[in-house]
Picture 1: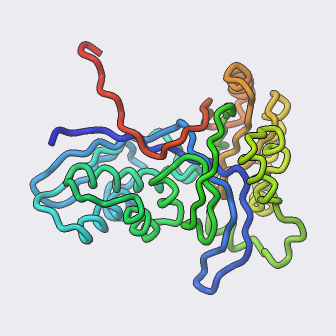
Picture 2: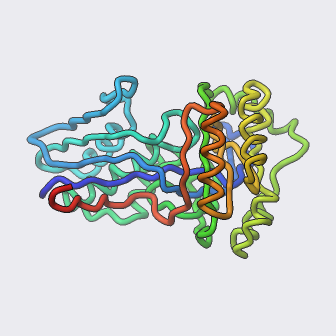
Picture 3: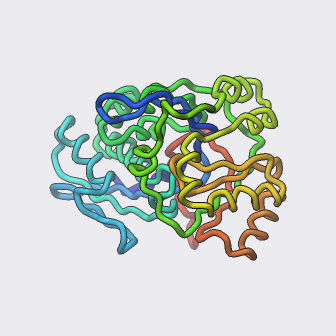
Length: 299
């Protein structure tokens, strides 16, 4: 089979609540996850034997610690194949940013190897294996708009959000997901996000109401340690965002705008202010992984 390239989409959280800490160390969550059109590219081709991962960044491991490698290894253990695979990863989604870049890359491996070796895995099998790589991987395998419960593996499809345009801003700070969850004392939190109202607004296609009720309980930890996050949220709102929220455990923050023009103008203003290391203008999509269209001759 000829080499092919898949685009692995990032995600944001349209609200995130933590219900309780489980005995196994995980946390029970209730959140709405949304795929956005910001992606890494993974190219798949057959090799003589083994798993060969090539990355385009020096600060990104290309060994068995990478989720791409882990996903390929798991799949090839569950479905022995003749020969090996070469995967070339081109990063665009910022790393450790609360945008599920690693999870989306792993999800693309399930689609890629399923196609490359004609494994015949259905989506349910890919999701079942994917959660062994990471809690966000099952969502990233499917993508779209989902209510996510349990540790993130119980997914309920929701209507897509078509009219929202986003500006994603990542400040130049590192946030440890482990630190955030260890310092979130759920039993002491007096106010929780009203995820029922967020879900209802999504089902009704009511963007304003959705934005009104969107909250992320992890901000109670992250904003205390990193005031830059609150500052970016404020500046996004000052630039016309209906609302602004931290995605996941951070540090990325996104603002929601009603038009692409508003989002572009806000992104330009934030660039002038120099408040974020990375800025992206994007929109919601309904798939977690898509094939890159081949270039026309001469391109």
